[in-house]
Amino acid sequence: SQQGEEDPQALSIQEGENATMNCSYKTSINNLQWYRQNSGRGLVHLILIRSNEREKHSGRLRVTLDTSKKSSSLLITASRAADTASYFCATYHSGYSTLTFGKGTMLLVSP
Amino acid sequence: GAGVSQTPSNKVTEKGKYVELRCDPISGHTALYWYRQSLGQGPEFLIYFQGTGAADDSGLPNDRFFAVRPEGSVSTLKIQRTERGDSAVYLCASSLNRGRGTGELFFGEGSRLTVL
Image (tube, rainbow over all chains, first blue to last red; front, side):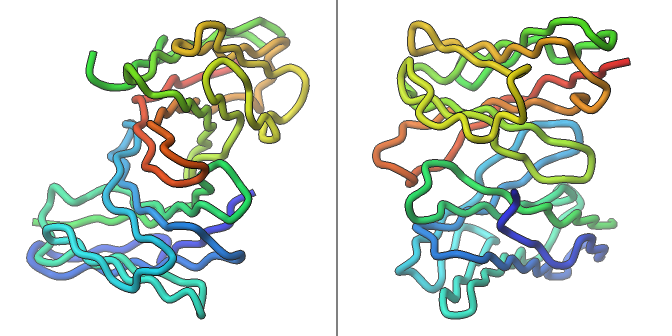
């Protein structure tokens, strides 16, 4: 089963704009991770945020985590056409040994 | 190679046939995972190996699916009597697994299985 739910399912923006994707989950977690997948390719890890962290930055990426609301957001600033991909949140739930993925947000950045 | 390697990249087979998909993880990664991804969906967990043993196979959909990792490195996912519903991209990932449920996963490019 898929615990994470990303929102929106699809997002279309212009280059230079910011893109925000949200993720909600159901049970308590050890950490939450975001992955990117270009069409027809494997997933690439972007960033990991632990359950005791509230915000994390990596380059143009900013991730927030609100454990009281069981939600996370991924912000990509100053987007580029090369950011076009599907983005997945994934969670490690307490007591489980594997990452559980959501259905993803498909981001299209137009030049 | 430096990354996770999966072969074949594409496999077309007929209903009822037997299929093997191979995964070569990053050297030194003790944890290995198989996921399945259908079109428009996120990866769905199948099985997790820690070393040579299957630590969690709760995601295997039925007994037609089996996976091995005999020497704690390369893993093979085996599907017997394939059905059209098995068509998907099968992803393999590995990690250092410093602790239970902690690290990031490194994914291969996947094996796209089409069952006619």
